Length: 394
Ligand SMILES: NC(=O)c1ccc[n+]([C@@H]2O[C@H](COP(=O)([O-])OP(=O)(O)OC[C@H]3O[C@@H](n4cnc5c(N)ncnc54)[C@H](O)[C@@H]3O)[C@@H](O)[C@H]2O)c1
Ligand SMILES: [Zn+2]
Image: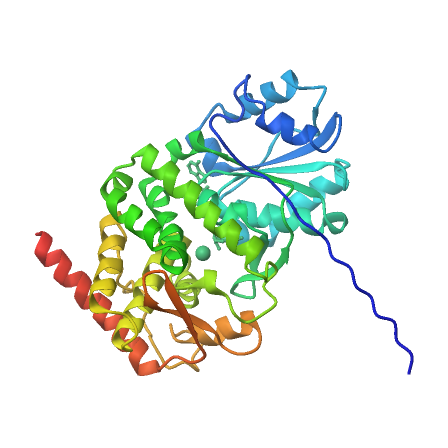
């Protein structure tokens, strides 16, 4: 037998900028980002979330004026391509094909750029299209929701849903750059404003008890749309996500361990079982409540810590009970049951089932099985806790 051994490493580096009003005439973040790739003009295809357009009617005009003003750097190949935002855009393969067709027809090459402006769903889709066209076109993400600014938009994963499964088709491709523009957050509905805080609570529970305490201290301000508190939350959550990806030793998630997916085995299943009526962040809040309660019932997590977690999520404005439309909790073998989420989670990770639980705030631990009866007890305990909370606030 003869064999050759191939080995190389590729270093990835990308900036995550925090700014406000990225398309204001005097804001140079985007233009300098493009110039970091060399002198222009750079061909650019802009993909825009319709939700952003609806909340900011002048956005098209602003983008086009900015490109005209910086014409020596930016060559927009067409007017921004507007696609509906939200999970539906990841469920429907037409969105993916629309972007691929534009890349093909408008001459976007591996030296050009796709600029994606939108929520986590639109960014996941645009990232998947950019990552697969020509085997990878450069992508600049401009996240416009709390969740996409504090988690999804700063990472390396891109995907669409297929065969009824979340994120079934996707790539691990780091972006060229990320530009978090706080001005976009003004237009968010209260659901989307609060929804993204669930991912910050998640990463605080996994990595940073001081951050968890800071979110507790600013919970009321966050719920009432306090901008300074939200900017701090976004910045620190993004930083912790970036540190985990960059320094955690497994940026492209080759092992079955997936700590940043704490609370997600049930969250992904709940999104699917509610026909995506639940937003990702809302489902993650329920998933965190469920796995924290499981950790408590299993004797791992102290009662006081368990109460703090549920209380924080409730104060932020999350409903923690599983919606009535989810009819079956078990058994695990049945595809339309909540517990089937464990089967799908294992399939998605590959290898052994690995679930993150909590031993304390900031103290994650991994287990390789979950007791079905205890999961159902945890669902009931969260329901009872939520009911008692409602009674106490009447
Ligand atoms: N790639 C990753 O690592 C990763 C991580 C976490 C979550 N995600 C994915 O992110 C998605 C959820 O993202 P999301 O919470 O941003 O929700 P979303 O993208 O579904 O957007 C929610 C709604 O807000 C609208 N919208 C977006 N920006 C707006 C703005 N500035 N003003 C008004 N409306 C606006 C959208 O049109 C949509 O209707 C899910 O698909 C989830 O799976 C991906
Ligand atoms: Zn998530």
